[in-house]
Length: 115
Image (tube, rainbow, N blue to C red; front, side, top):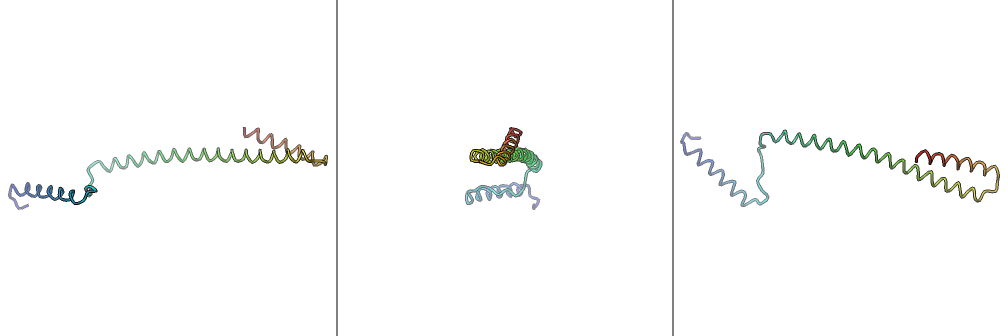
């Protein structure tokens, strides 16, 4: 500043004119270099909120992962049961039939336990 009372106003008006000229040239909008006071705390607040949301999503993913594993296990047991039932239908050896019947009982109990 030069000490003249009107110099500060003239400089401010020149700055405003430069910003207007910038907006005419650059249609994407102004580039913000300085951040207003309080913006940082709002940013931190939103980051904390996002972290809590992400944590809830991860917890839900873990529970759904466990459900998927349980479903996969149940489907596997049911396929095994189908195979054992088919083997029982074709079985002619009484010893092998006893083994298959025990396997069938075991598979039924495992499927029952999974619900």
